[in-house]
Image 1 (cartoon, one colour):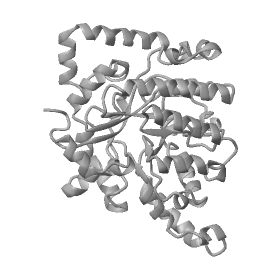
Image 2 (cartoon, rainbow, N blue to C red; image 1 turned 180 degrees about the vertical axis):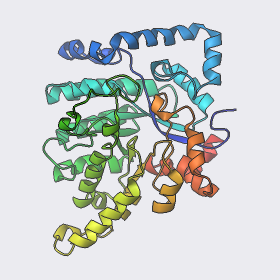
Image 3 (spheres, one colour; image 1 turned 90 degrees about the vertical axis):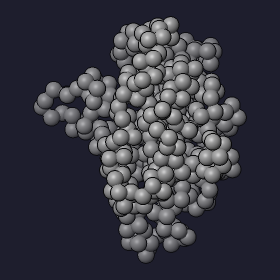
Length: 392
């Protein structure tokens, strides 16, 4: 019996746990020297290396493998999670989890792009990371590689999306912050959105790239800074958590206001690991603003569809396991929200299905199926019926 326990489940968020040399095979020249090491000492490189060594030793220990199978979701996480960086192990992990499809995002590999000192460096790091992620996901068709491209230069962003898609990526992510001094709705990006729509390639916004933290002055509160969510110092803290959804809201507002979702009506995307409790009120505020400002705003007057309906058609969201998904569905409708495990990150908890099920009490089974399966299929341009038949 798998963790999914017979239910058809698509997982809209999982990760690789990159090793120190994750990018090295895909870099040359000056970039190879700059980006060969994924981790710096500041980021806990020595501690990470010890966990990686322990996970690699497990491959030769039948008892350790059996333990991993028995505790695939409630056992070790991070680099010790089964299949965190070994693609063959990830195939086994998916067998034990029982998920039909799984989006796979990078983790610390994105930090290399963040360290870039020029756009050339950023695009070189993105290319290496994309090749590494696509290679990892090549082991099984259930594993869907999420590529990354900076949007700083629209033509290069399009070039990277084309390259990654041709190599096998099933989605493209980018920062939720404005890039290159432009709104994502600037006409310069229309060829990019056109390519995604024409090739049925969904876009992704994810915690990390572009999600903002509170101004540093708020941390000047006369107290020592508390540990992060994992008890260390490099991850999320309470004030950071409270601003996770600001950047995605701004990004989606720009996409609506600048007419992207109307110019490209078949464009689809997801907002991943930014929570979703904010979504019902965000939709109401979009429509409230539309009703208030369309009296004088010619761009709002030209819209053929309410802002909230544009979002409903184009975007899906992943709640955190401890959010009240049932309330969100009753408040905003069943078509917006998707299951995610965040595997093997600890934030996904040791029983995401159990936590979601607790909040879905009283929700009809067809609506649950939308949450676990078909909303993901819509986002990924998949026919749910055809996928279900193939799975059988």
